Length: 228
Ligand code: HEC
Image (cartoon, rainbow, N blue to C red; front, side, top):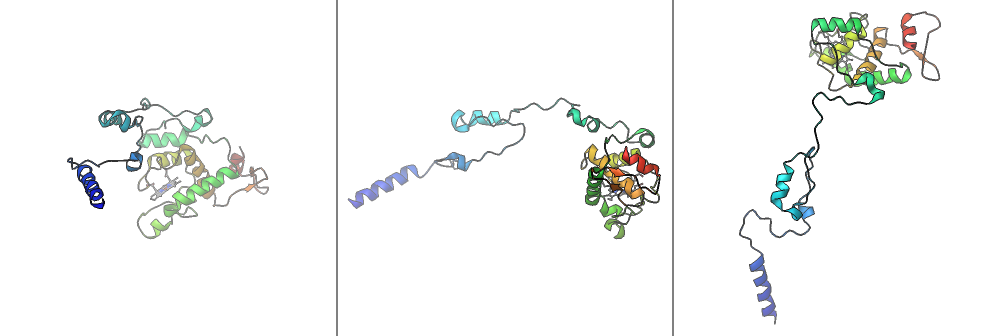
């Protein structure tokens, strides 16, 4: 009896265990576990190859399922209208000068939250070159990798915000463009903090609502401007 069973089992293994096609994965049960879907954007994964056959599924995988936006399309959200328009100034000396004259920050509020956000961006992305206090003495300056970084409170004291934005967008000299790392709003926020550094680096005083308090002992125009 045992011999018969062994012979039957051996026969089964012999007839089903080998498959001629060397590339065949053999019998697959629970195929989902063998083949997890590799998801890529814009590709249609709708059909299961086990339902429609590998050829149909493969052809379908080559087809884009979602439409790409039309060239020149701008992401639109009315509340962000000031921060989504294309940059209007060319990457030229004239464009730089024009931005310095005409480009103004669209931030509608500059208070504690905005300045602290600007400071955070500055600390994360700019201190390695410009230094914490903006004197041009960050680590990459001290170790000699990037030379000639100007100080905000000295050479760049009167640099207008439009030129700062232009430089952040296109880069200048050894400073690369930051347009891909910083959204338009982030660029304006960090510029607000650079203005603090231009004026010595002390944050202004804030009231309970996070609005800038005009210092009592000065009638500085900058403090007025910050309150607007
Ligand atoms: C790799 C080093 C490096 C990093 C990082 C860097 N900068 Fe600069 N930055 C420079 C150098 C060098 C200059 C001087 C460019 C010139 O005038 O040739 C400069 C100049 C500037 C200026 C003056 C631009 C002008 O129009 O004269 C501003 C404003 C500025 N940086 C802001 C920033 C801010 C904000 C960040 C962070 C988001 C930043 N930088 C990150 C190296 C850097």
